[in-house]
Image (cartoon, rainbow, N blue to C red):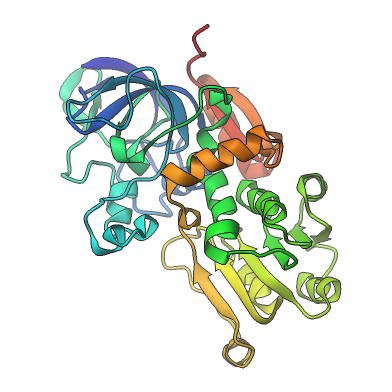
Length: 374
């Protein structure tokens, strides 16, 4: 077994505790990745706070980027030394997976939040006892650690000339916002789009809407600094929801409502605003992650008689092997500057990173774990 350092959550609400653990050898279809950096996502805090039923103790982290250290005997997708981004996990054999809908895998919850591999096994153990397991494989990776074991399925090879320490968030949060616009909503040239929520997902959607050719791009949030950044990233208009009714403001800006809206705050009241802000035949995508069982309401006739659509979106409806490298290329061309969302932290600053994220001080924290070889 290999000794690793990892951030472990042992009780509801945290904190993240930096501990030495033992990590098993890769299975035949697995890849050991030396984690260079890992993004911190709202979903990590959702799991830490037990808004989703994730078993404890657990190593979280699901936006890892790093270098392939070791491959299992049947792995042929990557080789030792490859630069990779880790993304969500899917089974590959259920009906949705077989038809290409991997983000809607029938086993998505178990594989991403169940704290173990598909067969129920774990690879991480207490340092003083190889018989006492710590839950892992969060999103198929558990990358709040110096090394992560992932299935070759959710290991995505990326270009060596891209800044690897920056790329981890493409595996979830950035992919979710950009993919919601490009893959799920299919925002088209000349259309109007509004992002309700100016966090990493919402701002990624703003950038993607610009790439997609939307000509009216609106950001709605309550933090002035985020609204200012949205303008820098491609928004044509902003709305401070504390100072103006966002529904009325969107209708005024668009002369009748937005063609597309995306709700990323996870707040039912904001979802209602996003639906009400739509134009006739408009579409609202839902990507916010509230506690399990959260319910929302809308005006049934207001949706039915206008032909509005409300769709749930997981991981931006993305095929990661195609979409993540595409986002890397857009970044390299200067068309998707997601680096403007980022602030770096060391592993021993992980609790500060979480606090800064929750307070809105930092939009997308990235935890550095290893430096790149010279």
